Amino acid sequence: MKIYLSVDIEGCAGIVAREQGSITGGAEYEMGRRLMTAEANAAIEGALEAGATEIVVNDSHALMRNIPPLELHPKARLIQGRVKHLFMVEGLDETFDAVFLVGYHAPAGVRDGVLNHAFHPYELRYNGEVFSETGLTASVAGHYGVPVALVTGDDAAIRDAKTLLGPHVGVSVKRGISRLAGDSVHPEEARRLIRAGAAEAVERLKAGEFQPLKVATPVEIEIDFYYSPEADVSALIPTVERTGDRTVRFTSPDALRAYRTFLASYYLARSVS
Ligand SMILES: [Zn+2]
Image (cartoon, rainbow, N blue to C red; front, side, top):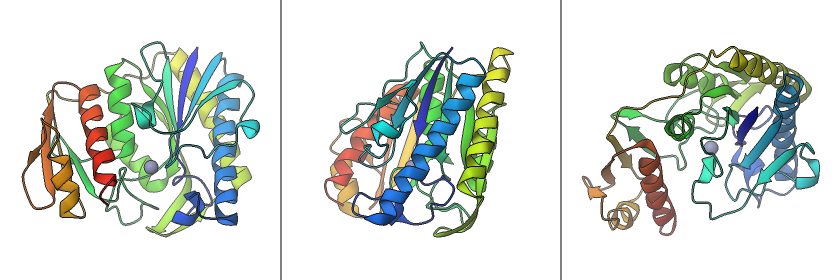
């Protein structure tokens, strides 16, 4: 039983500020990356207890070198660094039995979503609906026929996952108060909840309870950027059409190609923002 674990930071217990996830954040960041790593380890422990045999961890946040390798559970492999061709789902393919999302968060604009965004804090619409990183990750997993079995994050992330996914295990470790404030369980309690959730996810996976997310194809993505230059450079991509001062749109035949075009747009936009 092979589990793919994509780990973000904003949805972890005790994280409410950008400095806690930024390499320039000093002591705040050193604490943040440890909170993130401990939650990843809790998910790994729970999965192994319930019978998982192989775990691949993708460090999915920012520069993607947040998890200190020596502190990660020794049974897991670790994918880290940039540029990755598949970003938050690098290394995922059809050989996995399930995907776990740890430390995930709500899409841009959800008032109680702590540090809400989807890549950037702009609005991303996927087939007409505001979409989250959870949705993007699940869509690529679905392309490979792999279900999302576990989602951990704040209340808003768990709500978002419920609207997107079929049956899965959702574990909330934080109640959002605003984009920059939250009410978390103690990190030890977060680990206990995640470990139990991961074990439950593997048990239910064995029982065949989870289905891969299948998005409607072709996929249409629209992005409202913050600044017009981001749309200027994004519209240089052959399939991307400029539809407004700060808005672009493109259509892709499947979820994987949609994700890749979105990534191209993201990397280009970051070069001018
Ligand atoms: Zn994120």
